[in-house]
Image (tube, rainbow, N blue to C red):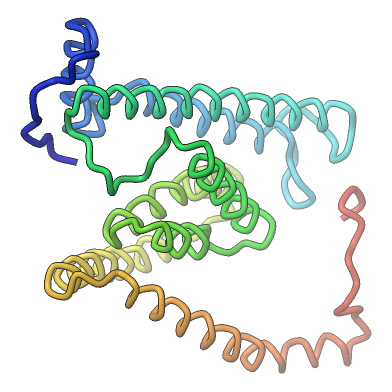
Length: 264
């Protein structure tokens, strides 16, 4: 967000608060200058990659010989969960305090931005992050399918919602790509070929969304577009997968059953 012209400070804002608020506004000019927030995210990515390599899976061996569902396995997983909780707490406190200060000093603050300092809104954001991450990790779907519609319903600009969703998905993507490359399970050239078209489509979509919002001022249209795409997906995916499922059933596989995670 570009720094806006700000009105004179409020009477209860001290000189120290004004100076600190100016520093915050300066950092918000770009992502690289917000090194504390980026450091938290970077550390989580590094620890997530190490966690996957140390824990292993049913398809890849652990670098330290950790077996699935062993004591070491659950200790590693628990330590990462605790680390995530700490990171969420620190990041939330940081975002809330900075927004409160910007609002108090009337600097680079807009009433229509997501109100982190509102406990209800903050809980909604945390719930969106948890649900999107769970779907991306457990079901193999893109977390953006949750992040983008949820942020749009909260009144976030389509460009901001799309960019935020892609940034959040970046975490699971970097982790998966790194682990698969180390385990020699990734077709790099194929991935690069697909990514070219993804980048072109993403840039084109963001430009189109920005133009549409500026022209009409309506964000709700994108929500209906997403609803339409979800409906089409619900119809097409079962039809496309039906022959494969039918063949697996004919081969005697239990297509309704769940396997034991620890014995998979």
